[in-house]
Length: 496
Image (tube, rainbow, N blue to C red; front, side):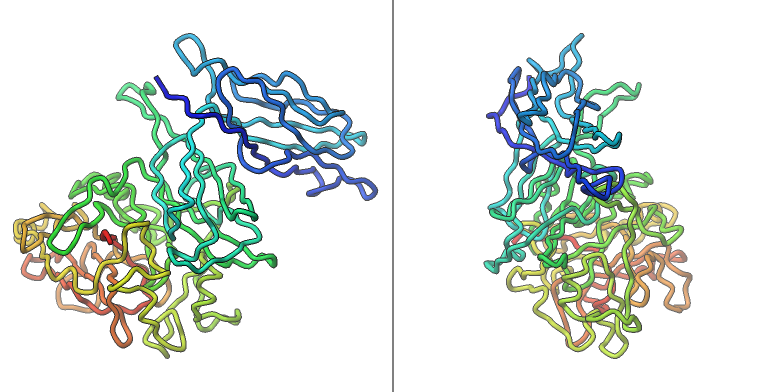
């Protein structure tokens, strides 16, 4: 039986939308219908509550839709109160209710036009407050939950900001993150994460889980400029639970932003879910994985706005006339802009200099993209590993379809699987997992690039490996390969 947590009464509101505009439908009068307070309506079993709303020039209000089992007892347009009664219990055999769902009202005007307002009703009463665990990235593992995060800290530092507004900038699935609101007084951002059904072999629903996905929340100043942003990482199993302890530290069991670690599986879905997000060296903001696991079209995974519209990332370079490109400030203000490398500065995404402090091996930096308690690994950490011998010497037909290697800690024998997730090019941002640099042997079918926090005078340090299609002797494993900083590559976080 599900536990009922203490009742919380807050309210979710989506600002009213009129057929002809945000406020009005005629030149002379303004029409408005909206709920009063931000958040979501969370209540306990069988409770009757009164929810206030605001309206202007609305002559009547009707209920367009409400969750199954919930009752709207009265809509009092004069006193501007809606009376709602929640279900008496959770769903059971022969009794169907929706434990969560949207309440939609329609307000009608004398002119025959209409406005709508919607709010989210929740009976689960599950809330996870992460506002004291501020970081650039949050791991979310619980379905049907209202989350709270802090938007006043820059990374995990004591540097504070005071955003005027905030919203979901992009998400990897429509409706992945819902019913968000921001309180500018407290700096807290709340949002709701629903669930997806778990089915058995016969297609029968046997449970629920959080949907896999990634999203970015952006905070804005009063002029609408982004001042900081945060990564939401939704995954059905906590990547910290099965962490891998090695002689060089404890690593997550998957790449940053991945939903799973296929551990050498040759199944298409396992391989694809093992590909994480891509990061330019020193930036905290993620870029999405490929549209499919074979990189066949070199196109990006689809992403969506908070309203469900398809949106795309920008790829900008030195030839653009946009002001500020090639600066740290520009990158912070444009989380969806992949800044191409400048030939004049060693193909860094910063065009005037190199900043080795953006990521750090000695201390977690303000721009570190890893969640709380984790960081980008040290520059030389992968020197302690090598490709698992049996895979290095195996026939290509036996290992090629794993799309990655097990690497082995030479001191302890601990194994860790790293997907060959390729990289985004410093020249154009294009995704590629084929190494075709003009060597005498054939192009590689997949390659692996993993950033570390190490940096040289111009380039930065990474782990690089590839699989040779001709013979195993040409397999390559370079634990401290220097790469241009404008490349977009995977990150495997290590515990602080």
